[in-house]
Length: 242
Image 1 (cartoon, one colour):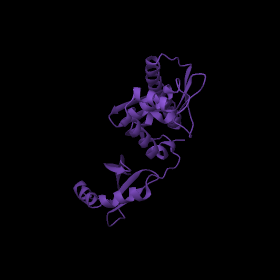
Image 2 (cartoon, helix red, strand yellow):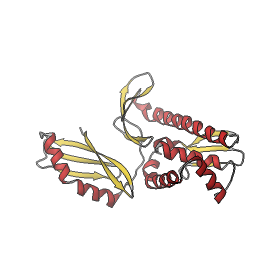
Image 3 (cartoon, one colour):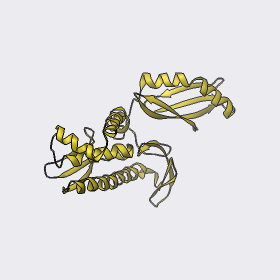
Image 4 (tube, helix red, strand yellow):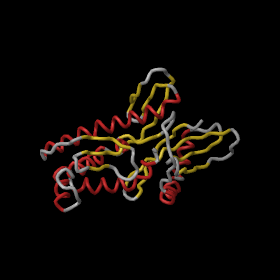
């Protein structure tokens, strides 16, 4: 069984990405090796069965440059992901590990900063986690959208959370705001920008100078730039959650 050894933070196009590094021991293995799995956004230190953590860390330190090169070379190659025991996912920009405990009751909670536990039947983990993530998106989107709408004295007809892979949000001529359920995975500042962006469309149904001037009244120019870059860099990683 692979266990988390440590996390490696790498700069990819100016953005920091956390790469969890796992220890994978094997009684058949004679030497240590390091591998990177871009489709899982994970790295593995494969070692003989008995080896000290100090030795592993020293080996890892010597090969961090190689790992960094692999991240730059292959980036993040995504495949469809689902929530299950041991899954790593993003929540408000942070890398979270999901731990499942078999139970007939449904309960989702954080035990510490980067561990989320779900208690439910095993075959319902993915369904319950997605439903919970959608609700967390709804809560944040509603709070921020209402706040911004009140500032410009505009009424929101409805806020809907949708499963789309073409846009992060949208605003209809009827005043309906639509948000991608995966937005709860992005940093709060980025989610906040998306809300500011869509609410600004209540005044300007275009991307004119007037529209962007309105967005800048809600969030700073630096936040806009940071958010656009973050979404562009991480969109493949986010959209792997089909």
